Amino acid sequence: MRLTSLTQVPEALRPGYDPQAHGVGIVHLGLGAFHKAHQAALTDLAMTAEGGDWRILGVSLRSPKASDELHPQNGLYTLIVKGAEGTSAQVIGSVADAICSAGIPEPALAAMAAEGTKIVSLTVTEKAYGLDRAAQGCDVAHPAVAADLASPQAPQGVLGLLTEALRRRRDAGLAPFTVLCCDNLPENGVLLRGAVVDFARRIDPDLSEWIALNVTFPSTMVDRITPAATASTLAEAAELTGCEDLAAIETESFCQWVIEDNFPQGRPAWEAAGAIFTDDVAAFEAMKLRMLNGSHSMLAYAGFHAGCTYVRDVMANPPLAKLVRRHLATAAATLPPIPGIDTGAYADALARRFENPAIAHETFQIAMDGSEKMPQRIFSAVADARAKGVDCRAFTFATAAWLRHVSGATHDCDAYELRDPRASELQAMAVGKDAEEIIAALRGAAFVPPIVSADDGYWVEVTGLLAEMLFEPMQDVIAREAAV
View 1 (cartoon, rainbow, N blue to C red):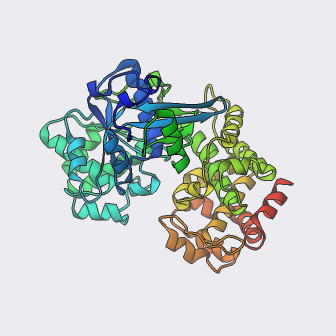
View 2 (spheres, rainbow, N blue to C red):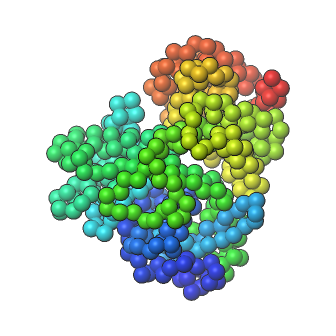
View 3 (tube, rainbow, N blue to C red):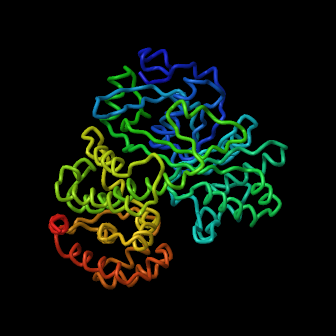
C-alpha cells in the first residue's frame, strides 16, 4: 500500500504536528534528496517546535521524477537517518505538494507570487543558476538565462523564475519573498542577488531597482551527506513504515545549517531544529567548501579511479585515507580563525563521517560537475595558501586527479560519461593529449582564476602528478604520494 496518509504509519514515526493544519509559506526550487534530508527535515522540526504556516511547495525544474514520487503521497516521505548510534526513521510532513515546472512554469510562478509565500529557497546545484561570478551578475551565454531574457514572462531557468515572480508581486502590491540560496557557493546570497538584479536590469531597469532595494538574499551554509536513494532505501522504508514509499531517502545523522538572519517577512523557527544564525556566514562557508567539499572532490576523483565505489571504501583504503586527512589539514590551514570552531576537531569529525559504513555515497556521483566545483573548492584556497606559506601539494594532487577524471576512461580503458556542463570543452582539452598539453589548455580556461592560472609552480606540480596518473594505475600513484 502506497504511503498517502499519516494514519498508515506508526505513531512514533509521525510529525509532532498536524500538517493539514498549516499552510504553505515556502516555495523550494530544486526538489531533490538533499532538500528532503536538510531544509525540509529541519522545517519539519521547526514546525513541531513552534508551528506556523511554513509548509513547502517543492518544485522540480527539469525532471518530473521527484514530483511523480511525492505528489501521489501528499508530500509525505520517510527520512532514514544512519549514524554510528544506529538507524532511525521519521515521516516528514513539511512538504505540502510537489510539482514540475519544466515546460509549464505557470503553477510555480503562481505559487511564488502568492501572498502567503514568504520564502523561496533553492538547491538547484551550481551549474543551474547561470552566474557570472567575476562580474557578480548573470551569465548571458548560459542557455537558460539566454532563453529567459528572450521570453521573460514564460521562464524556465532559475533567474527567470525568480525575476518574473518578483515582478508579479511588485505589480500586485505585495511584499517580496526572501530568496534563500542553499547551494554550495561562497557568499551564495551575494552572488544570487547580483545575478537576479543584473538579469532584471536587462529586461526592466525599474524592476531591477525595486529588487535591489527591497529583496533580501541571506547567505547560508548547508551540510548533510545525502546519497541518492536506492532500491534498498525504499525497501528499508517499507519495512519501517509498513507502506510503499517511492520518495524515501537516507542520510547521515550529522546536520548543519548556518544562516544569515535577514527575513523581513518572517521565517520558521529553524533554530529550534539546530540551525545557527549569524552575521558571518562567509567564514563557515569557506570552512565547509574547502574542507568537506574540497576533500570530497579529491577523494571522489582519486577514489573512483582507484576502484572505490563509495566514500566509505576510500576511507578503508589506508593510503587514500591518509591523503584525505592531508587535504583536510591543508584546507584548514588556509582559513582565518572562526570563533568557537576548532578546525582540527572539525577535520576529525569529517573523517569519521566519511567512514560511516551505513552511508553508500558514490564517488562517481560526487565527481560530477567538476568545472563548477573546483573554483570554490580547490582554486579559491590556493591564493590563500600561497599567502600563508602553506604547502599546496594536497591541492595540486586534487587538481591532477580531477584532470585524470576528465579523460573519460579508466586505466583499463573502460569509458564512462563525463557529467559536467563543460564536458565537450574539457574533453577537447584532455582526450588524447599528454599532461603538458592538458595543463596548457586548462590554464586559459575562463573558470580558472587568473591568480591561479599565473602560478607556474602550481602547474608544474600538477603536470608531474597528472603525467603519473595518465600512465600508471591510480592506486600506485596514491601509494607513492601517501608515502611522502
